[in-house]
Image (cartoon, rainbow, N blue to C red):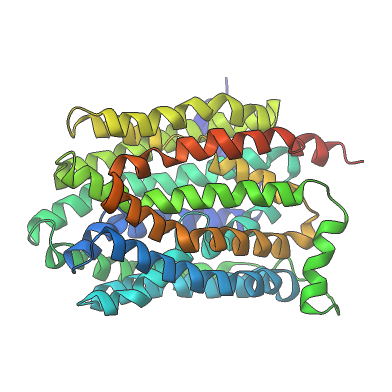
Length: 409
């Protein structure tokens, strides 16, 4: 009888070399990036930011990320994914470099620019996801993304515990107590980049003579529903960018979370992601992307409600376990890759990155104003309101991409 471990090893064995190398990158990056993930906003506050200035700095970063989105999308299609990946890994290295040397709010500006370029659904993550999508067959794509997620979570389980110990050792939740995390992250990512890049094989390069704007205009000529999907992604980017910078601040200052609890929260989130990613990915490959998204929606709502209603900080560990459940990003990433032909994925994702980043520009600043001037709860509950009023109604109108890819018209 085949065990889950045997099945996993056989699945990876039959995949391309690129997929195996990218899974290894996911594992290494999750550890080194995970060291500082819980502490970025707290570090920014320790250097003098309040919620409004924190939101404003994140909005500046989103603006720069927006300007890079479409050129990078075209780079993926016209000049190959390997060149784009080199640029992505360079951005990932620059992030801890700028955070580690920052001494005040002004010096944080380049750090938060690179944070916006490299975090959830960012430029670097999108480049990596396009590379992974090119390495997988249609009927295995959601499962493949799930497996890459599992490996990324393994490092993420260890990192928060190590980070909590280091923060306590170096002085607690202060700038100097958090700063060593960025030094370690910087050294680790330089080593990872030096190994991963030479071992990747170039894919995705196509010939084209169209002008810049014409290249992107052709994306909408073959597939219906793309503009609606873009709007749905914009709504998602706005809500996540409005709430994300303030979750840790809320946990520490409103629920009195300690460094140890923050570490447990991160471990719970990572474990949840690791345990449920493959079952959710296999479910999406079996019953479809949309049905799986519908089934997992209530978990997202429960997450933010529990953060607000938690009677003490220990309940946040359960809340973060729900937050780590793969209720959307993995499946929506698979959907977005399948909406267009392989030769247009780079430019299509460039459009998505541009659109998401436009939505992010005001999001963090608006989140900061709501958090400080009105009520923190308005920010924490914003993702639920946006999902019910905008994202879910639009999702209903989007075609099921699993059938599109397996049974093309």
